[in-house]
Length: 98
Image (tube, rainbow, N blue to C red):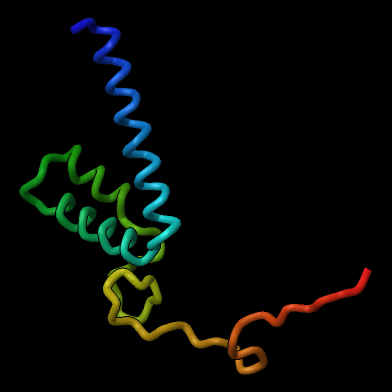
């Protein structure tokens, strides 16, 4: 196999993986955040190399502090954020005539 063909397959595989991650984060954000947190925890173990630990710290979800009740939603044990009493079903839709 030609080396340029190998590079082409590698680039295509990278693009497919990137689009899969992007779609997963858009379609199932809590699921993606749980997997991201799990990967971060697995990579930051003391027995891992420094590069793996750095990758684990980089993958750590931004809102996750490790405390219960921080609202990150990665563990599924936090309380759901409360909706405002003014609009319990979200923001109302207003129709205006032209």
